[in-house]
Image 1 (cartoon, helix red, strand yellow):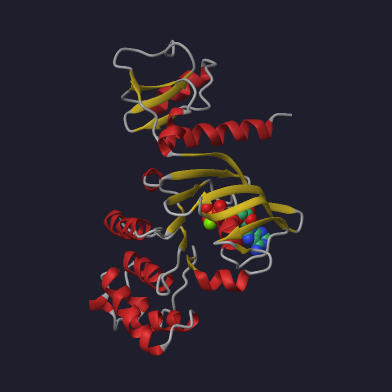
Image 2 (tube, rainbow, N blue to C red; image 1 turned 90 degrees about the vertical axis):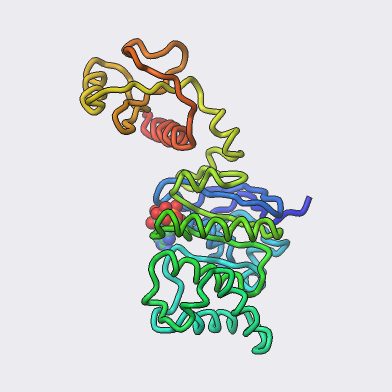
Length: 302
Ligand SMILES: Nc1ncnc2c1ncn2[C@@H]1O[C@H](COP(=O)(O)OP(=O)(O)OP(=O)(O)O)[C@@H](O)[C@H]1O
Ligand SMILES: [Mg+2]
């Protein structure tokens, strides 16, 4: 099996604070992998260590067969990375940004021009090539960042919330590009807060407090949710939730979706369920809520 990323107990501390707490992960080459987790769970810190931009304080790992502790310079050259923060130069044009990155990746002048044209065509930015990056809308900016990250044809793409700030149509276009790279054999690792995007991944790692708490295909993750989910229609789901809590029911995993209250129960349907209650198939969001609540409850247990 060709391995794109392998880590063993990968850890990063900032002073006394542990941002990434012993991540062990093996990603075969090819396919789209997702890191999903609450704010501050350590996704960006983990990605930055994989990108050769931040040294781990513990554990080990390799990326495209290169050691993240000793070969970070080589890793930076071989992978494509789109950071969560704005990584473009606002006062340079679209073309100049691409040219700048071409220089960073040491592409020769003759080769660079051809690659830039291809990147412009791929990201559908040819007509915008002379616009300053500052004038681009969110979705276009993200596509440009991706174009810059793939100029040197990397075998691994690390995309940290690359679609934040893009509207649904722009996100759809962006994902088409991701699939195109994956189909051509590129390994893609993304972080996202969009659960619909996570559904598009071949495999997802849920990260919380710097550790992986689940790691599987979206289908298996959804199937792993214990118990059953019920949707209780109500004209006042907030009132229903508060009322049931006041009556002493455990509503920790319950949430409101539109004009309904969703409740997970193990065993029989909830006693308080009235007419119209439907059993529903879990979405990734349900598993996410369950895992986060479970971890939180564990943390708060004395
Ligand atoms: N350079 C740093 N110095 C100190 N603490 C840091 C540093 N970088 C990150 N942290 C902390 O590490 C934790 C994890 O941050 P990280 O950015 O990796 O989370 P994240 O999962 O990417 O969050 P988000 O979803 O908001 O992007 C946070 O509590 C953050 O404040
Ligand atoms: Mg982040």
